[in-house]
Image (cartoon, rainbow, N blue to C red):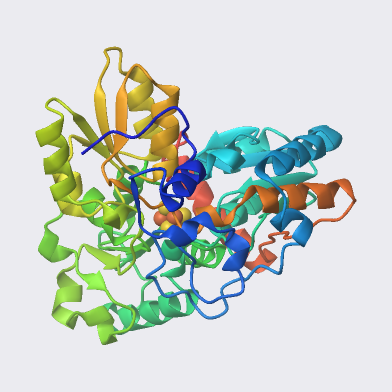
Length: 436
Ligand code: SF4
């Protein structure tokens, strides 16, 4: 495995070099070199890691971006974004997720994981608009935590999250009804004071799912506090229903000593999720059949190769990776954990990282004293994060300068109230939480 060229951390530039034949690196698809507006009106998530996933009907689509932005050069967009931000001053705060492209992240006032960014917005109460360069569920979370008069803007409405989309509220409600048929009334505690099942949702889920969890005595977790949250849930319930990411649920519960045979998968397309009533009775954790297509790309073969080619390499992967990959790595942790581990390494170290390529390349550029490379040798960013192009950011900001708010994300009050309850339970379980 060869390490990446580090002088330019931009994944966009790497893709252009691949497409023009100036680089021998591989990409999962050369379509990535096109503007995301080419895909906004087509079905699917667009090119990148999630291109094979099925997008739900009714997923938000983006209207056409004006040609002035589609046709603008990178330099022009850069200048327009800076000028618009300057004109808006403290009236706007731009948030950039770790997985965003470099051309967007450089304009962010805060860079972090989803929960860090939602909390960062709280530090800027004077901002009338929060421009969230991330994906849909993150903008919803920012809306839940911000003041009602602050507008949260997602520059491209087609920036969803394929994993969050795998837990649809109707499917989850249906699952809950089926579980009630097996376990009896779900809100009645046993002699030890525990209900049959407590729902736990990963931060990477829609506000509707967070609201469901809040209404049913459940809680939200992040990839940093999943263990603390599961412990919280097990004191209140005999079982946990964990969604949408089966891998985070499995990796966390396994580390807590839950046997794999007591963690059946819940496939929403099958009766009883594909298990028997006896298996559900015996279950400790019901794992929703969801996954992240970025983190599913990592394999134990990649780890073996990294170890063979880089003796002494430190392998750190995200807990959204499959269990065998987490087991084969030296460490597993959230994006915040990965970043901290690299920052705190005092000796020059070789790191093989199993998470999204934009973050890995940025870390490599920021820490030239270390050798840092992505375990996956193929340049294949998160399809949905990639939908936020500087053209959309320039458009959203210039519209604000003109007094217009586009792409506002608002969570309905009847969903927001229980969703906040679920988030507050998480904060009470572990105040310094961080997420994917
Ligand atoms: S990296 Fe995975 S979980 Fe994160 S936004 Fe992309 S698809 Fe969703």
